[in-house]
Length: 162
Image (tube, rainbow, N blue to C red):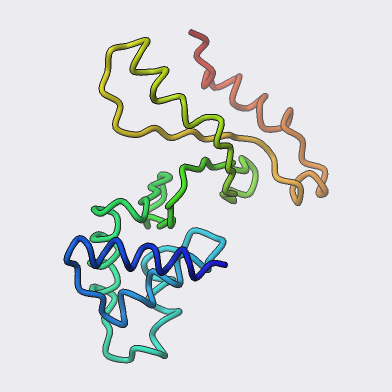
C-alpha cells in the first residue's frame, strides 16, 4: 500500500524533471515508512549502511529539495533539529505536552478551512497547519492528566483568550 505513495511521488518528481537517484528514492521511502517524524540525522544513520558514500549533507539537501517541492514538511517544533514529515495528504499533529511525542491525525473535513478562511478574510491562503495539544495514552497510563499540565500553563499566562 505504502509503495504506491512512494511511486506517486517518484512520478511527480519525474514530471518536475528531478533526477531520481537511489539515495533520493531511499530517503523518500524511509520518510513514508517511518511513522515517526525523523530528523535528517536519523534518516542519515538509518541509510548509512546502504549508502556508505552518502554524507549527512546529501540527506539534508535532498530533504530541502523535497520540502521545496512540497512532498515533505519540515516541522520545527522549537528543538534544534527539524523533523521531517512526508505529507501527501493534509494532516494535523497531536502533540503530547508531557512527553513531546507527535502523532499524525487525518481529518479531511478540515480541508475546507482554507476556502472558508479565504471567504472570511479575503486572503489568498497558501497552507494551514493545526496542532492539537494534550496528553497521550501512554502518559495517561502513568497517571499524568491534562490538569497537571494546564495549571502550569494557566499560571504562566499562556492562554490568551480572544
